[in-house]
Image 1 (cartoon, one colour):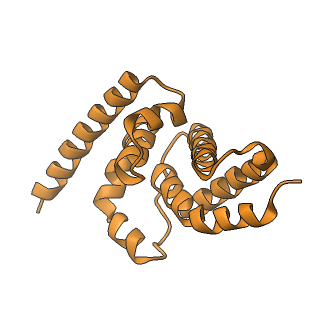
Image 2: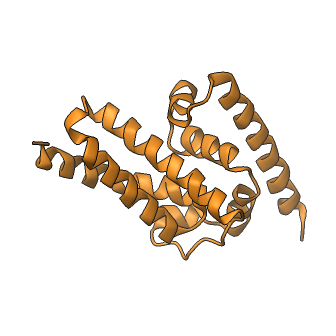
Length: 158
């Protein structure tokens, strides 16, 4: 029988972070909440095989990123984000930053969110996304360059 109390503690500790990461990737808060719920449901189904909090974190992030990619492929276009619900989201959700993120291909967006926002090491991002480290570094370089270019252009406009 899986440890319900341990799962509940993990869920409470990590839910907001997973939802925020998914919101940055999907650009839609309600989709992010649905994706996070599905990722945690899948984590619960595997909870008896989870060895540690790090293993659980990797499992739920990897699952959430796969679900985000599936959702992005289904929609084929970014959707304007919902109104922010907390101070961190308000600072992140400045329209030019969200627009710039939305113009990135899904893998580049995932790499940037996992590495630069969630703070995972490149090797961990590669594992979570099922890519080689060199591929993640290429995605990061391209995404960062595109963001720099897009944000500088927008900053110069009156």
